[in-house]
Amino acid sequence: MRRKRIVIPVVLVALVIGLSYTTPADRYFEIAKNLDIFASLFKEVNAMYVDEVSPGRLMKTGIDAMLESLDPYTNYIPEDQVEDFRTMNTGQYGGIGAITREIGNRTVVSMIMEGFAAEKGGLKIGDEILKINQVELSKITPQEAGNLMKGEVGDPVTLTVKRYGVNEPIRLEFKREKIKMNNVPYFGMLDNGMGYIRLTEFTPEAGKNVRSAILRLKEKNPKGIILDLRGNPGGLLMEAVNVCNVFLPKGKQVVSTKGKIVEQNASYATLDNPLDTEIPVAVIINRGSASASEIVAGTLQDYDRAVVIGERSFGKGLVQVPRPLSYNSQVKITTAKYYTPTGRCIQVLDYTHRREDGSVASVPDSVKKPFKTEHGRTVYDGGGIEPDVPVIQEELHPVTQSLYMRGYLFDFATQYAYQLKSVPDAKTFALSDSDYAQFINWMSGKDYSYALELDEHVKRIQEEAQEEGYYEDIRTELNQISKRIEESKKNDLNLYKSEIRRILEHDIISRFHLEQGNIQVGFKYDQDLKQATEVLADMSRYKKILNIL
Image (cartoon, rainbow, N blue to C red; front, side):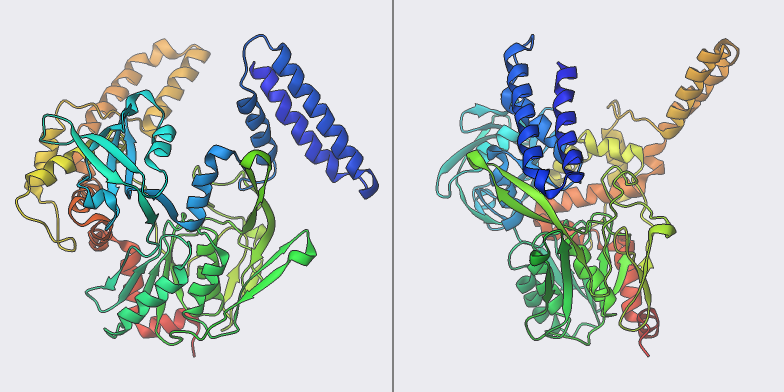
């Protein structure tokens, strides 16, 4: 079966490659010929293959492989996923306002959206969902569970949940409502007099919400504004223009798009009067800042309107357009590349040299091109926005990752939160040493095994020694090394206390103050934020970075 399924993508790739070398006169013939070949092959496989095959699954495999040969963002969207696609673009859906995550075979509530049915109806972070209406979640897939949770506005939905400290399952009833995700979940003044805004996505009204937040902050005379775009995957291009317009004069070019169809090339400029062109601005980005986030960071950098701080951004400079297909499906096609005002394209078309999450790790100097900002600074294209002030990002240690993935941090936070007698303050809350000792004691006897790179090195040495006939000579030493590594791991809960405690604090505070608290509790550990405030507080440094005379 596997061999047959590989044939279809190869035929589809051949179709794409073949079209690249045909003359315009032959193009329609090539399309018709290859479609006929594909249809014939598809029918024969479905009719003759030894085992039963799913026509829909087989076709999607072929389509996905064909589109994957083009770029990572040209995607087929079957009918049952169209609603999720709309949600991503509009930030709206019919539901109750609860976010869940999978921990093993459990579905737990990880966040409650403020002001919606889930909060008003008594659902709590930490609850394990057992049933949606009368359907047991253990018998369906997470995707099917997600589809059950969403529905028509006004329709009822019943959840049966297991709650910490309660012996019997609890039955909660809700009415679905129009859920509009808040793209500015937090803004406020920091203790050092800086205004801070977190923008999580460029869904409708992102520009309006950023403008409104800054108007509120300006009432408190901030020394500077910090716009946090970390983890923001992008969204609507015009909302990126609107966000830039808050800080840039009317008529300033923000982004241009260029593709194969020349008539569809476009240039987008600010349309309104700005809110403020003088206040110092810092934009924080990381490897998860993509697309529209990169437009904003790159444009404000090109005009020397903001200092960009953090980590190199994702590197997605391609524009996608959805096109309807038959049977209510869609295809999202990359139609153009976008360019910042200096002419920079952020996209690297070499998709092979990226991190596992798809972001750009590093870009060879040979593929970079220099460009000049408004004040004459040199910036580069090819592979995301490079920050003016880079901040080294520390990866979580494998022990912390294991504790998170296995749900131990989440479960301890649930237990801890239920035992607290008063509501903690989000900005000042900190887990004490005695609290952390309680966590270590709670972890006693639990399996949180994990592999280090060192384990992999020892394993490779063992395999190579076996292949070359030296294993028996060094077996004792290898076993001793492995035992020493395992012994050392027993101290990792103490050795990596700071990062484990940080995640615990986020999980605990979110149960009391939801998303706003989850953001605030991290301020004291935030190295990006620390750099941003230091730059904005030192105007000589700020002006030097931006080459302001």
